[in-house]
Image 1 (cartoon, rainbow, N blue to C red):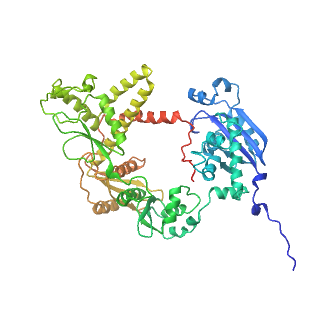
Image 2: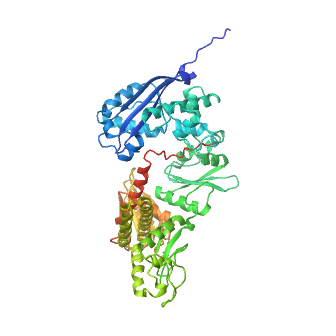
Image 3: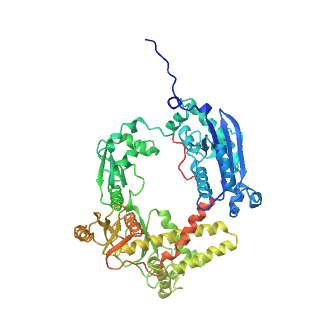
Length: 580
């Protein structure tokens, strides 16, 4: 019998990289996110077989003015785009230029996100195309010895790009072409010759991952907590999900790209699931298990007992002290703080606003000693010398106590005045440092007062309607989740509420303002309670914030975060350092 050779189809052979048309695109925009920002320039280079076959370059006139710092960064000004076409005219030309090609970009989610948003805005259809991200590709191809990060400027130097990136669209696209070719040359040496192989190589699953696919089979499609365990029974990692089986399955697929998780899966020999009635119960159980077992592959929430508090000491002339525990001593506390650095920043902000003493010695009711340099600088009333009486010093202490438990207005306004004065004298760096301290203080005050308000409530019962019908029911006691249940669709939820209250955990109150749970657990409960659609069923006691309170100054903390994001509007916040 004569063998007949059958030519494979393109689907079987794959699309060779050498004959694939790539369109490498780069955008300049008025900001870092498509929401509220616009494209100001599109640059693209079409390449095939290592050769440039076409270029596309056009300025775009946005509907709003280009921010000054963007103009400085990109060199694109309002004058330059005054006669440029709108995005509605440029976009169809670009889509035609890129038709039938593989789209390539450095930090592709940024560029593709803006292009998709522009299509939605102008009524154009974004085509179904394959997208290649050279930043993510470089992360897998390169080693840390070769490149400290995967920024375009770093990779352009590494691959000796003929064009230096300069935040102009066409120049950056040309540099990305050279980076793409350099990466493809590396991949060719390991047998990647088709687009399909490239896609598989980018998201390849290790042998160790494939061998652990059976781990998810015993878990239900239900909300809960899952624990990866080692052969000796050690808990390696604790996670939560609305669907445990589906979530655990992702750890052994290409969607899991975290090196630590890949290493963890290679060690794990079992997964234990704890089914929970509601997603909130799963979130809380996850926090409790992490704090209890301290799995080595969990980075967050492992040591809640290490939190710090700012305390007004109980003595004749109180001062601020950094402590680990809250006691029933009638003092005012602020916290908890996740790190000593943040606690010290909040303490410094208080000291800058109120001349409360910073020395650590214990003073008697009638002290008599020499003043320190802080008194000479006007930053302390010097009660140690008798210059300030106990009654006069008590005014400062009351301001701090009121800020911790109620209205921080006097402190905040005093700090804002000093920040404005520094800015008026063009001492911007000092003003920025003080602004950051103020934002840290305000954020800490808001967090502490919100938790203290819930920690003071003996019992709170709340419900939220489920998408599939029925209700999620929770009992919260002194800030701790004491019980969770769901009522079936169509059933009267009141008997389920009564049964849940009767069987919920008995919780003893902690010293105020400490909740009867970890700070993270109480914050989870607060987020759920504050979600639209949540209804209060019963409240034993009073759940309320003081008025006025620190919550009235939340905009100060938000403005600080907005300023930091605006300072680096195009930063790729993904952890794109080389994996190896």
